[in-house]
Image 1 (cartoon, rainbow, N blue to C red):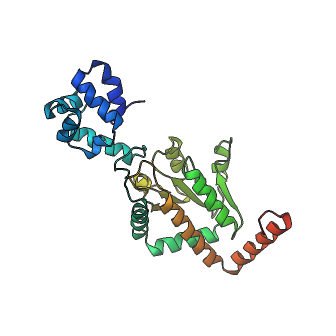
Image 2: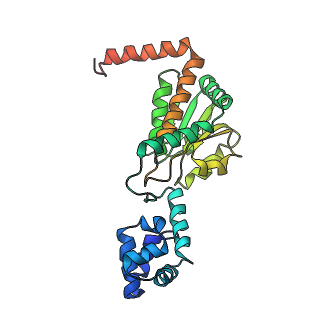
Image 3: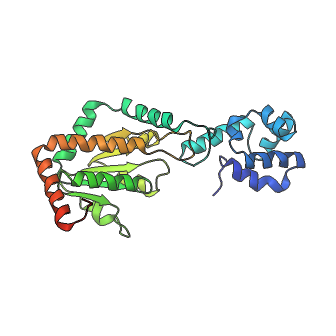
Length: 272
């Protein structure tokens, strides 16, 4: 479904009624979508051999008040999770990843992380819930926790409904809910159902809308400069939490990890 923010789709929809000069602008932007956010009206006009007035009229024709309005709409679209370019291809990926990690960990309070880790360590059961891109993160979280403690489950199970499992919340259970931008419509309902439970939400800044309905919110930064979100920060956060859980469990964690390692050998599951 097309929205006003979907600039390229609006160009496509309005293309038949555009003048020849406006079509040259449309062709240019379709071939160079980064220009929507990186170039001024004057630069677009120069690149298309048109005028600033023609560029301004073009953006009004496709539904925007100005080129700046279209630029802000495109940037908002990226912030919602849509994969589009907002920077040129020479982006320094390493520096962007380091920035995401720094923003994430600078915003996390050690006492909150310690408290959450202790609750996960001592919980009667830990339930991890993730949809779409959050599902592999939840899966990895479960695999790490299973190395050091019993009673860790992952939801949703493939092909299964959630009602039975959400009803089966134990006393003293901790639920870790992972949800990042472009969350499923069902996500809001799940948060509401879990209200009053010990629920930790791992999310990006857009997930702060749920901070009054869960016990804790841990914010991770995914970046806006590259077309696709980076999940380096949430993976690092999961690693930190698991290491702290290991520390709280001490000898029990070491013993379980060793028992599992023995089973790997017995089943001949890993390379020597």
